[in-house]
Image (cartoon, rainbow over all chains, first blue to last red; front, top):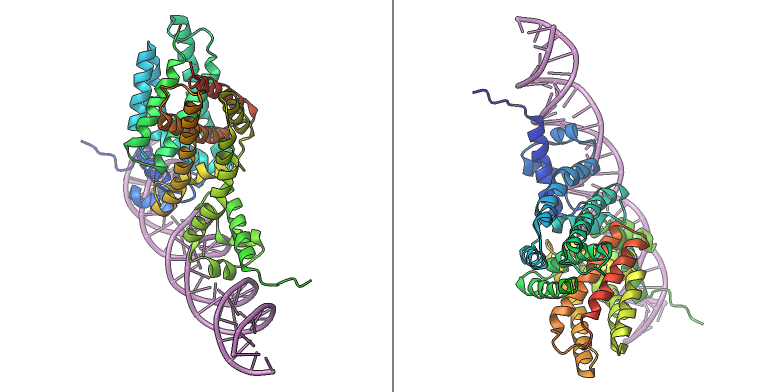
Length: 199
Length: 199
DNA sequence: TGTGATACCGACCCAACGGTATGGCGGCAA
DNA sequence: TTGCCGCCATACCGTTGGGTCGGTATCACA
């Protein structure tokens, strides 16, 4: 069996995965390229062969790794929700699982740090938020059509609110780990979700 | 009139204010001490005379400037709220005013960046969140006693949720400035607040 | 088997980082 | 007036930051 020794796509992913770990833990400015290539067990030569500079690498990480993770954990599951009880259960589960290593937590913390100052990163991150909101809009509109979301609900408003709520949970969870705050937030969120119920 | 030439307390505040501007714009790791003393029109000698190191200065900023600003804009006003309509108006107003320069936005972004990795900063920041939640708890309990908050409401849960919601708004606002998202979030938040109303 | 292109390494560059050492100057008590 | 301490400036240090460059190993293809 021939094992290729040079696998550029794999190398690229290895770098992005290492970068993701560093970004999630130390933020964008706090993550050095040295720490990233050390974690990847590669060198700066490899890094700068695949990416023009640090920012371009961060954008690639956002688009190639972070966005798909958000998609998989937070967005795709919405498609198979068919009742308000299912939506409640899903939101509660995601709230209780929230941790600093979660993709959503990385999205939120990178956004908070960089979006205001760096428009390139900001736009890449906002695309994910936009997509996320869009998925909630689609869910709520479907819920209205299927009769388990109240007719008077405005999907775009509630979608923006829900995404912001998860973002907020991830911040307060970072400040105050432990189950307590997550549980109370999850409970209050379920109370809010009840207001969307038909009738 | 004798104008004192050495005013250490004033110098200290000048440094902290400059640090606050840098932290708000570039985060903790992204703010260099050089940029801070330049903004303050002082030198590192002054900085390290008043603070042991960068982290201690950040803690001093959090406790001496950030916390009082949060207190003034977000916490103290809660004391003079005497009806659910007043609470709705207050929350809407704060939502619509939210900007990257707001103290709450700085609190959130610094928390997202540092709380998970630096327990010293994390605890200083969490104190503010804790105090904020406490103020909402007091408000909701008073509202129950005065009869304009529903009896079945659990103040601690709703307080955690409200603080998280504002934190989330500040993040999504950073990613997507402009009135649109803020307005829709404010609307949905008011819808949620209605669920707290007595009867 | 050669050959040009791609993938990666390792040493290096300079600027900026957080932090220190020293010393002058203003203000106050004796 | 002197002596001293608190306040702040200046110059500097070692390290690390992002980024460059020449070279080498490996590839696809001829």
